[in-house]
Length: 111
Image 1 (cartoon, rainbow, N blue to C red):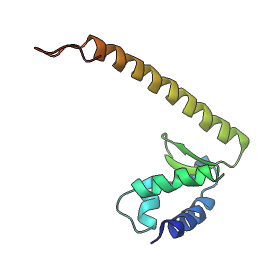
Image 2 (cartoon, one colour):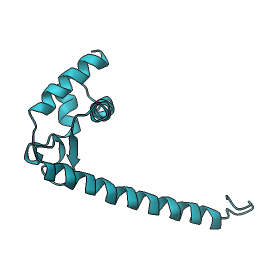
Image 3 (cartoon, rainbow, N blue to C red):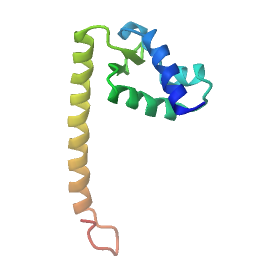
């Protein structure tokens, strides 16, 4: 299946998953599209978002991807993204700090 065809089919499936309560897991999407691995599906979802589709995701049950059906759903998702971004940058800062302190036996400092 071409990536364009996959994108078209994925868009169609997601249109049937409007609202958080109708979230569908990436594995389920991949399976419906005939894939064993969900990596390509996740890549195409990112492309759909870039093209303007309001695809959100959630990790709490029912976990998965869905199209925001209300402004509140979209705002809740973007707040979760902001929180995760802050945590990732804090972890990055700690790794940089720790790498500067870490000295393997017989070697110079990493940074």
